[in-house]
Image 1: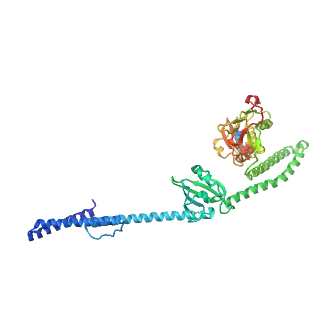
Image 2: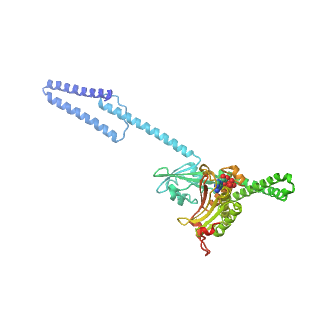
Image 3: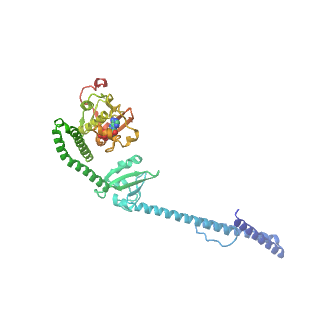
Length: 447
Ligand code: ADP
């Protein structure tokens, strides 16, 4: 027991003993010692009850305790209660200050922040930027379902996806369609979600400027290059043997530059498109074309195998899908040493989709490079790519074409063993093959 409490107890018990002794003496003086002691003891008990009642009343009324000055256990109890009340109050004040500071920080954020109730998707709180970017009004929109408030945005569907909702990368603001927003949903607790909307108009404009710049430069380079290339083609290196090595190199480099410009223009064109025509892509003639191209490129140095077991055709753009497929086939031939095997397979997938895969037995790609391999100009080996006539843009084009077809590229590779590039098409992109000819068996098509 702490010292001051012990001394309060001793003092209270001492006072009680003193009162009882005085009462006994007084009682003896008047001839009724025990009667007087009993009355006085009852009075002491009554006084304690009165203090206890006072304390209970104060506690139930949540009254503020005053700092007590007297001695004894009751005053000590008052003092303790005053101190704990005081501590609680300052802790509450500190917490409130922190809460206010957080709210002020969230309110001052340049991004729109909206706190939603998870089950009802009603707005619990939002900051100033949410008024500016999403058009929410305080207090009218507090407690309202967010989906209704942001009508033009595909909110209902998106919010329903909840935890699995992919960020919306580019959506017009309901306030001003020129403002483009990036929206993400963060389920930060079991009860609440956070919706964060960022104004990405400037970023998208910059991206557009970059795209236009690349497209314009490529376009401007095309004409002079065609002229240079044309004249170089007219010169026969055998006519001037002393110039032969230079002419051959110039022809090779101008060919490379032309291919580079063409690839850059293809990429710019693909980037500017949101959708492509949905034509019937007949896979049997497509596979036959791919085989011819592979054979022409390989010049009998590789074994080319075509397997077609899917029995379905695709919906999409014939031209762009052919460009994507032939990019993969040309890579397989270029990055596989002589005597290797290239297998082009088109097969059905579980769930109704289809997969076109190009397998080679070539150099393979170290795993560390795989995540970046589809970036523009990303090469595992620059010299090998240049030697084989690559521009470093092939897989970028493939990725863009596939995005426009909602298809997915999967790459598996082992250094020294070979690589498999598989394009997975969803069920929506697949339809039964029209012609009556049965799907060719792998053996029948093997070269
Ligand atoms: P490039 O024009 O250089 O071939 P791509 O975008 O088509 O450019 O490919 C990027 C890089 O990926 C290539 O430089 C090469 O290093 C690697 N690569 C692509 N396909 C294969 C393959 N089938 N086997 C090995 N490496 C490959």
